[in-house]
Length: 402
Image (cartoon, rainbow, N blue to C red; front, side):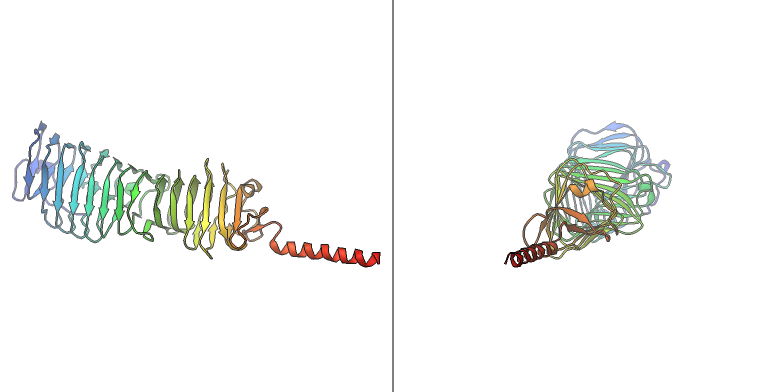
């Protein structure tokens, strides 16, 4: 947690060296106002005008702080911060809205674009709308949005995010339990982890993230989700290019839903990750071990790269609502559920189609063996045995006729 001097709202009545504090209820008409120092508001209602800008904030000091019982609306906001460990906008107030979008740019190390937290007095931030905002961070370790130990509600449509050395979303602390993040449209381009969670969420109160119709610009192979001891639900809806890796440690509980023509190229690591497919295409680029598999209303396809192994946990207690195709399966040790022949029900097995990588043909029937591996019934070797028996029978019959 960052520490700021003179955070008591009662001491924020006067303009002080290096900081402008705004108290009261008033409206400023649209005009261009620039500050070379940070701006703080801890109570009252204020509309910040078009052209409002803050630049070159100091190290360890947020450019703008909206806290306490403050209600703030920005009709135009431009920030260019250069300090290290210095977020662009820090929020723990009652309400925050950007009518025409925010334009936040930071360049210092660990200088997050938008920082949500509780203040020492325990104030909890209200709902935040980031519609049509632009957030760009270029410092090492900087995330576009950083949520620390507080339950937040974030909504944004058509937001543009660029992080050349950092990530998109970061959640830290169990106080984030119940956080809800919903992004629709826009573009996200990151160099590091897309979503990071560290001790975030709680056992019965997950952090929920929804990405819908988002255009992506990151390189394949990055970590799309990386959680340590966290509870998080991630839904990816109609994202054409969702390339990278999903990782969760044993202390996490993660639910990932891929739906509505989402194309996912990558691996999943962590048997604490439960996967739900609903009209998705998953290109499995590396060996993946994960939790249970759920199939929702739409048809799904899972295609294995050459030699890839895919392991799910026992999924027999889940009702599947549609079918799945496993494509490019090399042999009967490619896809595994649990560790015995009871890890899938007969109904689930009837919903699985397998295309053989060698022959290009569909398996006649899919079974699960005593170790949980999917196999073809009858197995290819059985055809040779059956053919041999038939040929032997024909030869014997021929000799008897003679």
